[in-house]
Amino acid sequence: MINKNIENKQNKENEDRKEKNRIIINAIQLSKNFPGVKAVDNLDFNLLEGEIHGLIGENGAGKSTFIKMLTGAYKPDNGHIKFFDKKIQLGDPFYTRGLGIIAIFQETYIFPNFTVGENISIGREDKNKIILQSNKENKNAKILLESLGFSINPTSKVSSLSLAEQRMLEIAKASSMQAKVVILDEPTASLADSEIKVLFSLLNKLKSNKVSIIYISHRLEEVLEITDRITVLRDGVKVATVNKNDVTKEDLVEMMVGRKLDDMYPKCNIKIGEKILSVEKLTRLKEFYDISFNLYKGEILGIAGLMGSGRTELAKVLFGATIPTEGEIYVDNKKVNIKKPSDAIKIGIGFLTEDRKKLGLFLNQDVKSNTSILILSELTKLGLIQLSQEKIIVNNLVDKLRIITPNINVNVSGLSGGNQQKVVLARWLAKKVKVLILDEPTHGIDVGAKVEIYQLLGELAKEGIGIIIISSEFPELLAITDRILVMYRGSIKKEFNTKDTDQEELLKCAFGLNSI
Image (cartoon, rainbow, N blue to C red):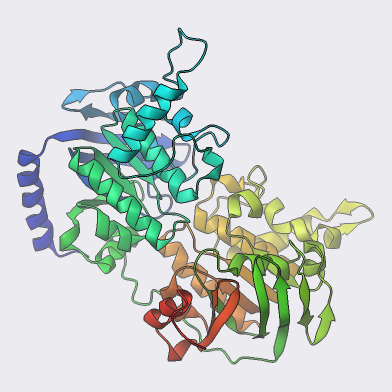
């Protein structure tokens, strides 16, 4: 745990900082309970004017509940919040937004069929005029965007913007609303490194204009880079508020999980078996070209590459979500014809999509239904599902994968991100797949859950399942895979034995700098 002397030093520095900077938000002994759960417990938190304050913790630590109280979506059971030293009304989102407290969530909330200028001004048009003053809107939007360092055309449709530009637009809109506090929830999700740099430049510009920012992210490297102070939550309780220069990533992880993680990336030594999957000259025009590789039983094969390199597109073809232009796929040395996902499932190929909430889960269904959906035909006799057998299978998988849930009849939407991912894994284990493809399997889940996912993948590999893992996190690939294929502009640039390479070499190859 963090050294007590360091903590005392930080407390003194924090007090000195408060004297120099006004406290814009001061949350005092906030508590929020739900049936059977103490989501936030006597939380004290302060945000200084013109600072970037990191808020971290595992899924279920209380971050979302705290932010919802701060933005008025929830009314706390106890405690109060001061805004510039004045108590504010709680439980009213319109009131807090009017104060200038604005949250920007991971999913964008903008109108894709409207222009940039219309999105910035929407809700604040001159209601006395039938025709919107589009020229004035565009002019004001242009001035605002340029002041923030962006060259986005105000007349462009939002649907034509990249995800990074849409994120910038949301921040620009908050700025136009005279935001004093901007809360960012996983702002760099799905952004490339170059786009993250642009975002960080914008945040520092807002900071220089005395806008305060709460930065929520599972990416601890980013938190340590962009923030001034960091507050760590665990089980609804504040563990500490620290100055970012006084802690390491390891310190933060230890505070988040309450224990040391000596082996962040557990790797099992597994004997690789015979070839289970073979891909020969697979091509899908405009997406990827001439892809050939083998996968073996018990092997974890990594696929690296930048966004747009063709990684996900390749996975979709292997699973039958899209059809290749040419090329062949073999499973157990037999040529297979995969035209739709049901074809892939029948021959033993499973796929965990990157977007588990939209494409991987039935959020309005319970754990049991999400787990057993692929084996219902096997559980059905004389037109009736054998409910007792279904319950036994699902409960066994919940125990095996250590899924934290009150019971299997709980809606999966109420589980943490890590446990939701385990439910999708359980579904494929119930189906007893031979090949499991995972696209960004640890995206958006906390560090403790990541370790458990890595451990589970090792256990599955021990059982002889061939695993393909697509990931943007090179340290993750280097730690848990046996081989890594690096894709660049739709082709496999190079194949590496994991033990013989490093992060720098992978990155160079992903940018097309290495020769084969």
